Image (cartoon, rainbow, N blue to C red):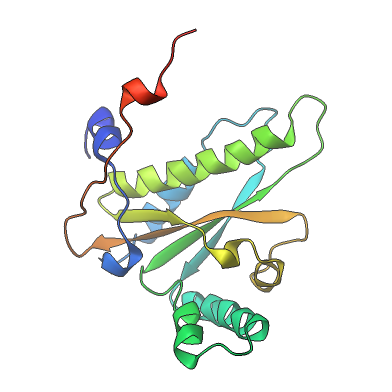
Length: 187
């Protein structure tokens, strides 16, 4: 297992199309999800849950996405519909992070949504620490109510993102990172 600081300094996203199997074992998946649930959570509200897409479930979810896309884009080419159908099929495992808020006198909705984001980041980092490539993505379908309904989200739930996890097929290139002098001020 890599040193924690070095892992955080060098972590980078791996494109799902540059991933292959095998995905995490059941024990590794349990570790990833356990770490995903160990995030700051003011009020102990657990304002998130996880949906696992692996095996045939990835294609079934793609059918939901493709059907909604085709219905909302009646002139769409078959190739474009096929792209939508394959949205979750590149990586062997995709974890959906579902966010919801609960009324609370001391914990605003914004904090609860941030907790879901922290959960997604922990999942991403845990997968990376276990030697997998990982990428946190959204897309039009992550915000489309018809798709969310088709994936089983409740009316008051949102999709904070989808973390794609698999073995990298090639080294991932780093991207330019912000210069600290441009993003840090002192009060």
